[in-house]
Image (cartoon, rainbow, N blue to C red; front, side, top):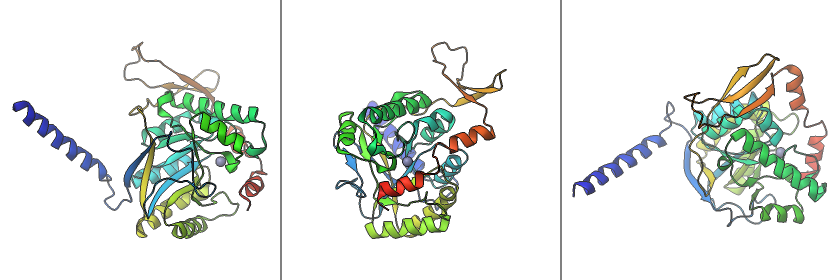
Length: 320
Ligand SMILES: [Zn+2]
């Protein structure tokens, strides 16, 4: 009997902890995350009415926020700050070479509770025109790069978004055979359009969302305008009665990942090493990512991985 009473008390304590966690610290008016939708990758192959018939089983006025192409400082960090201040969880589709360059941000995204999928290694132009050999390499190396940045394969969700939505039947079959869920979108904000102001992005997003009433919203965490638009968009979502749903893939994931600690080296580089509570603990695998110290040239190099023609290319990929 005592055992039963103790169990009951524990359950009550567990419920109260869960309820407390739903309150957004320091922001009683936060938009928040209304529910978690866990999907079984076996049940869903392709999602998003921009390209497909099937999408997520969302109720009226439910949205899922997604961010592509990052990480890239400082915009990814500003966006993470905005999401955290509203206790909103999103889904990220990271580019492999960006994850390789900024593994600390990849881990921040994960440790702040967001879902991480991938978006190829180099975000090549006209994905749908590549040879299948190249497509397969882009997908596989992208997954490897993001996994290396996370340091734990279980932290990555089997979610993939096609660069520029560049689809073919063969590409989709390949992704399906790898048991990856291909994410398109329901509401494209076109936040990457040249000259888009934060106000224009929000207006476009809300207009398209209101027309559909629910859905997966596509944004990019590599643009200044998007970083500036997000706090306004989150306010608009709340004011218009929308609820944010956090999508996760079924399966065990680590609770959190060790943060990377920057260590200067003698050759002017920065070595990022896993921070452990006890550095003498030999049971902890220490991983290191060596990246060049951020400099103007490096920063530009990362930016320039999208040569100027991307917008036009994407325009044609979207038929716009
Ligand atoms: Zn992209």
